[in-house]
Length: 135
Image (tube, rainbow, N blue to C red; front, side, top):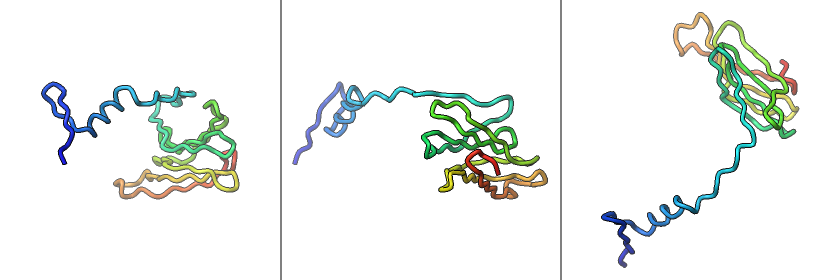
């Protein structure tokens, strides 16, 4: 069986390539518009590493602000309902957050103690928070 080959200029295209080209030119759905966007942070190194949609349709995010774990609850429009900072003088960061079945949150990350001599000295850091972000 002979493959159906088309030429565009001096380039040879197989039918599967034509489908991809056609899809890329005008058949792609338009991206959804952004509902809202927010920027949080200050003069320190601020990062969000995880976000989860909560049962009430809002959002909770976790990350780091400076050397502290940062957890915030956002309403459906992205406004902060509350924010909390956890940690001590070590470099602490949260990389995961999920809503627990009791309505609170479970947060996972790491702590890099001030007396650590390498990244191999990092320790696991777990927080169980209530629905208001309190320990």
